[in-house]
Image 1 (tube, rainbow, N blue to C red):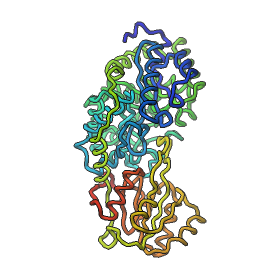
Image 2: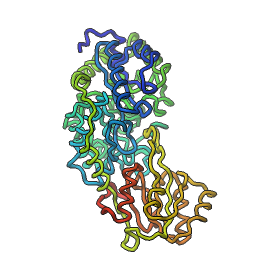
Image 3: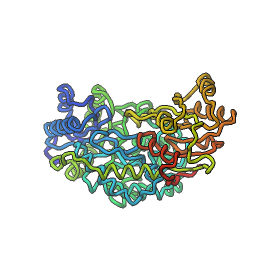
Length: 517
């Protein structure tokens, strides 16, 4: 891997990470990738079906990358766990970061990182856009929530450091995100441009703590956030700010690894700068690899804009060469696809995931009078699992909480919409004739119709056992719940374990990883 052998077009191709459509590499897509010498790729759920097709696609992309430049590709995905999981076939579905912390499984983090790496490598994936290092100290954060380990920076730092150590030991490049921290925002950067007002003292004692710890321990890549941090740069989001990426991350914190962007097509960039200018500004700010979830037309436009900017001197060639030198350095470590193992069955991986999930179920509020549930005089209510934000990508088929619980309890149930209106609430109240209601919420802190339904149940004199199937902050809006259980995600595994705990088959062992205040 010698930069001296690369043309300018090949160098620029190394600095882009692009998606593809479908589960196979079509002739049209291959022609496009070869034309622009693309060196890196990202998978979404739409690309990932069964093991054989995933591995075939990975092999095809590796071959294409080598035809383009003679250099293997970074093939990436977002395998965070919980609701942000792309690969299900051939890979274990681990609980969310917040569930892992609730389960008290800090000692298993490095082992889990190695397990995730082994499975991803078998699929031909060598870069994981994980873990999330954001300290989720804002209950109204619409995009992080359970993706964070905790609202305590030192806990996030310990959990993430061990996980990264295992992932990279297993041969997969970890991509810690979202620098300098997305935990205290009330806007989703997929949809708008957030701004954080905190001073540097606060940033140094909260947001930056996990990044400092993982840098010191050897994390090899970091993802930038599309957020304005006014104490550092009041004009530009971190992704486009040399003050943040070069001044703070490189010079002050001493980070020597790769800097990747969050998707440049997110509205925080696209609506305020446009894709072409955004890509140029990001490179000048110090970015090494641009994640660009655009169609082929948008990809071509950005690649041409960067090439023109280099030729005109708007982007110094030294910036390109420094980035490509770093890319080649880490590809020599992580992008050697010849070492990818075949898929195997890993019972110990599933066993660890089961253990984490079972231990994570948290009884926040409750009484012996109501729990464990044994009465048949119960009505169960829940919405279906759904995407809470764009990061979720898609939801695989999951069991309905209300249907599963009712089957075990021998009682009636009702599925509700994620944000019921007044008419739906009135219809549900006619059916809720029991004294006790088992009510599963899903991000009710964002979907206020769920709160309105809860208030109607309480006004009717019902005893309500509340189960949050995503963020544990729902109780802040429904504090009159007679019992409250946090499950941290809406997956088959968490649904089954939450119900087992509610009926007394397993104990409540979880501890809240955040403060509810």
